[in-house]
Length: 114
Length: 112
View 1 (cartoon, rainbow over the protein chains, first blue to last red):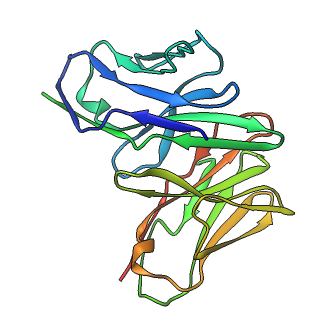
View 2 (cartoon, rainbow over the protein chains, first blue to last red; view 1 turned 90 degrees about the horizontal axis):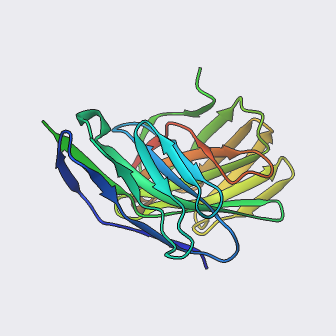
View 3 (spheres, rainbow over the protein chains, first blue to last red; view 1 turned 135 degrees about the vertical axis):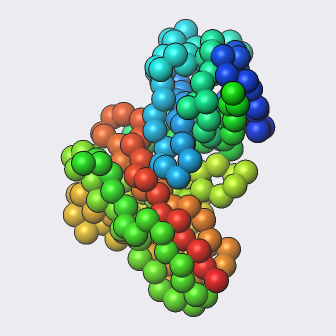
């Protein structure tokens, strides 16, 4: 079956530090890959996505590249801010027939300090 | 206004009570989903629906039921709540042919 593995947190960084959150996946077929972000007390928001191999998703300074050869979709940001403190979820999505299914990783909490 | 709304946002109830969580969406999507989120476990799918006539069980449907009253409304019920159903519950929607899902703000449910 499909599965997503992401690095355990919490990840604690100083403001302006470089961020990497690792995500690897196992899937049959050709999934789309997503990063969702959950700010404290809120629901999940789509941060970025990539729908095929070698695509790069980007948004708000975050980037992730769909690497089929390493089955990875690592999230990166060059300079984090305190406002980036949140829980980040990697997910893969597949469509089989009329079914749209998302499989989530367990989430990585990021804490950015001044 | 939010595209996906959930009511209530917080609920505290007692063991054995029947609880209904409601979800409404204005995105015009056919597909709707209910998930629960537990610390360290990510999100797990409870039920999903592709239209008002189609309901499907997810990976953790035991103890839950759903009703799709209209294209825009999808309710989750706990017939007899138990403490291990204490969790954060999310509703989500997606459009036909797309795997991306859009989430509501969540309902925090506590069962005492």
